[in-house]
Amino acid sequence: MKFKILEKSKDKISFLLEDTSSAYSNTLRRVMLINVPTMAIEDVEFRKNSSALYDEIIAHRLGLVTLTTDLKSYNLISECKCKGEGCARCSLKLTLKANGPKTVYASDIKSTDPKVKPVYPKTIIVKLLKDQELELEATAILGTGKEHSKWAPGHIFYKLKPEINIDNKKLNNPEAVLVSCPVDVFEMKNKKLSVNEKNLTKCHLCEACTDVSDAITLANNEQNYIFYLESWGQLSPKKIILTAIDIFNTRLSEFEKSI
Ligand code: SF4
Ligand SMILES: [Zn+2]
Image (cartoon, rainbow, N blue to C red; front, side, top):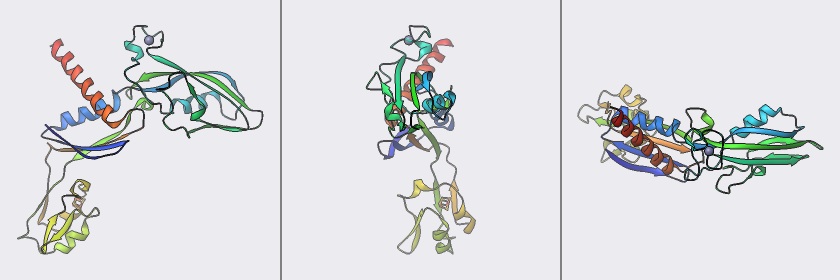
């Protein structure tokens, strides 16, 4: 199997997996999405809440606040030595205290671990009017997207790598093909229609080009995949991929042992 990075930034990555199968690609996608743990608020104890929102709504909003995640320092509560009791190795206390008039942001959440804090400080939790108060203690734990999507590390999908063949002998309307493509996959080179390799990965297999000419064929090569991964910010794209591969390998070894 070959791996090639196509584009990358702080929160996003796209990469090519070649000489693999749909089974491997889909398992990798699913492991990244539902098995890579991240930190999120799971429990909230309200001391005061005179805001316009019910405790449940605020707790729900807090659960969706993405938190930077340190996988080295925390265990999944189900795998922790405390056996689910909750300890410093599997859970983290966060507090929030605010008096109105004020807009309460995620940045007002105080964390006892500087490595775990809201990814987007400007996320609004609630707006407090004059004399309204909010005071709470929250517990964040590691969890996985399998239990709840608040723990999913990002948005991950893939598509088949497009393979486009042009039969120039058969082609009598190159201009029509050129304009048919919404993502400019074709170009004219020396008066001949050709594929612009730079734009090829943008092809989403809409088949508009094959509709206007029989000289264009799209191959369905189910061995090459383009992955797109956008992190929600808890973990870097690289960490998501590497953690998923570790989990995948561990599970395969466990499977091997059990048979
Ligand atoms: S299938 Fe659609 S996106 Fe791909 S090259 Fe043809 S027209 Fe362009
Ligand atoms: Zn524990």
